[in-house]
Length: 212
Image 1: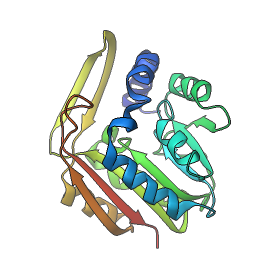
Image 2: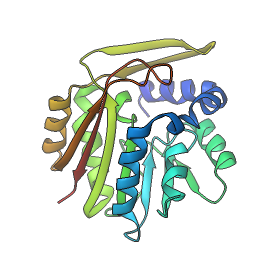
Image 3: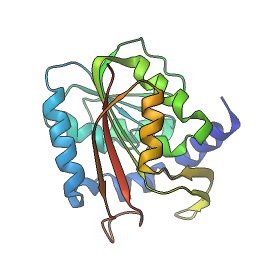
């Protein structure tokens, strides 16, 4: 595994408990996110397994499961997987790297990838999206979210813990281009300003795309 991903894994292992404490209930204060996930869940019910990619403590997986979706969660961090299993009994979680998933072709009906793409350097984004397309069934849906912008944020400390990773911001049209290069069909794009006092202060973009 590339050293950047080794450091990313180690960093999330360091903060997994605090991350869960702060983030696990965040959807309660994010009405647009809930609306988008509700619509996604309605589309996914009865169509097969949906993956919460970069699941963290599993709040997205839990939300979808509670709305009748058959769901699994995948994360790079073993610490996050351990926390997700503890907080969400009855949901399957397993470790994986979205650049190279140990999953069969056409395995999943849908993928919700909330902020997992932000840790992929620009030169690798299309490769990552190709991998997500590979594991989606024909007609499968990808709901992806990211911070809007063109910069990079580096962290070497997070909630008092030593970490070492970059977070990449993407412009809406930039990500649309990456998705099209990975042979996705874009169905809907939504943007919103940050929920003040609830989350990191950045504009957010959500793109719903389909594998042909």
